[in-house]
Amino acid sequence: MYKVVRAVLLQGRELQSVRGERTLFSDINLDVTSGQLWQIEGPNGAGKSSLLRILAGLLPPQHGAVLFEGESIEQCRERYYYDLLFIGHKAGIKPELTAIENLEFYAAVEGLEFTQPPYELLAQVGLVGLEDIPAQRLSAGQQRRIALARLWFSQTRLWILDEPFTALDVSGIALLHERFQQHLAHGGAIILTSHQDLQSMSYPVQRLTLRYQH
Ligand SMILES: Nc1ncnc2c1ncn2[C@@H]1O[C@H](COP(=O)(O)OP(=O)(O)OP(=O)(O)O)[C@@H](O)[C@H]1O
Image 1 (cartoon, rainbow, N blue to C red):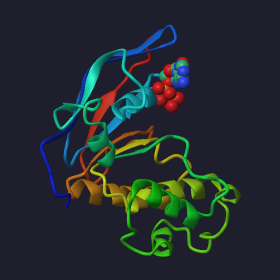
Image 2 (cartoon, helix red, strand yellow):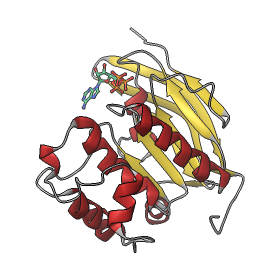
Image 3 (cartoon, rainbow, N blue to C red):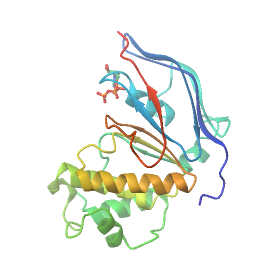
Image 4 (cartoon, helix red, strand yellow):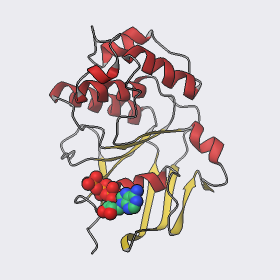
């Protein structure tokens, strides 16, 4: 369980994003509550990744605000990043480092202690025997499993994940659903983009659909 569980973790208020000449979306409102998983849907180019980056404070909106526990993320940046894990659509791993070294790198950057030995962590995500090989010599799905292993030792309440299922096989997808379920049951919240149909999952899924605006 996370120590502090409040009703609304993250709010997007009247968000608008303009990239180049095109308005991707306007007037998006979103309330993300502890225990919820939000799936951002829509066609290629609709602005899903842009919305995630705005919510993560990595891209400024043209209009609107993102609030974390009622406070603008601009005002509480340190507190927000302490409680946020963002994994972008590129796996974000260091290709020259091994799987173990990548985990050690994440732990150092995030100031975390491993709650279990890193070899066990990698076994949990199906990487037995691949722990000491430079990541660049692993497949796309194996590399994504390294990136997602962060979810097994993250202590942040909010996860923002861009296309987390990409390149994963059936067992990888099942593992991830299991981890999501645990996180939600413990009071965490997840916002993700995915083209997968998540409606038959054992946890409820809130959906926000973006349309392609010409
Ligand atoms: N770095 C950038 N600079 C300028 N424009 C960008 C940038 N990244 C994306 N865009 C524009 O924003 C639009 C929306 O991109 P975005 O990645 O948010 O869409 P998406 O819904 O996540 O698409 P996909 O399903 O293909 O991942 C794109 O059509 C592109 O023109």
